[in-house]
Image (tube, rainbow, N blue to C red):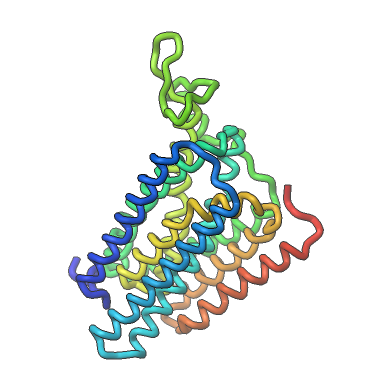
Length: 321
């Protein structure tokens, strides 16, 4: 287990990172409880998205300073900061696909906009815990079995191909096996009862549709964690960079959801871009011992793919409905 925790991050930075995450989640939950159920408008979502990106970039600057201070090497600090930025951008990009699935779930269950914020907050906490566990396990496995990088790379290539094929198809929850299983396991009310997950009907306690939504969001977190975590291991195997870039990308997920939900149709080609990113990252992992792709080049490729697909989406005259 010792090799798992080999990282350039000093102990105090781990503590600072933990404190920032706990404070951010606490603040979000306090604000949520004070405001109650309410709809997040586009302006609020945009402002919070800018805040989360700014906080992430500020933390990366702190990380750069910590690495330079502990290693006395500007080159090492630059490399590690670029790894964080690239990993953050990749995770942020892949989170877009999460958001399209969230949008589909909320639409399918006709979740009132005022209730969506609480569901997303719970989903974010669950995603952070889940990814932390998966990163620790994945980091240990890679430290013990280097050949798993090839397996992860092949998996990402396969996922990229599947995402490309599915990108042009209309997604639906009809016939979803997880949804069918949940409905078999428990009775579900036909109506919402505020933000409650369970309600009383005819003297018995049954689940509300909001509970079904939470379950599907949790399942989505698991599926996308399996896709996205191997992708960042292609950039770096430092556990601190993998974990922190993942978590900072997730912290802004709620604001980004409400932001993209309003303009989702304008970026209808984005899924194709995400598929190409997965193909690129997967190929990089498979060829890691043959071709060393610089971190700066990886960052440039990801940025160009995202910018290109967004530009083509806006220019396209046939948006997805």
